[in-house]
Amino acid sequence: MNTEKVSINVNVVDIGKIELLIDKGIYTNKTDFMIKAISNELNKNEFHFDRTIRELEKDVDIQIGKVKYDTEKLKEIKASNMGIKLYVIGRLTIDEDVSLQLAKETLLSIKVFGPCKMSKELKDYYKL
Image (cartoon, rainbow, N blue to C red):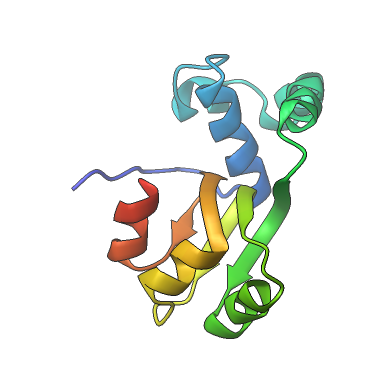
């Protein structure tokens, strides 16, 4: 099992932004980033987040902060006949009782920069 140890408390949006910078190749890992002043580095690199968001496809649903989906919310999305491509900077939670079938019908893709909590089945399907 892969584990990560963080020795300071950082809000979920900042962790998500840090993982985005790592994904973009700007930092090699969280420790590398955290050695530097977190607040100063995030402010200095704000243009990376804005640019990445601007570069996303127009049909991507960008969520920043704590994001939660339950069966009722996904059924509402399904009823609108619109699946979503979800892009989260922060924390994503999908209730454990959400079925894989309902998720497939509503969440076309998921990209998370930050922690995510959902069933193993959903994590495996979305490769998170």
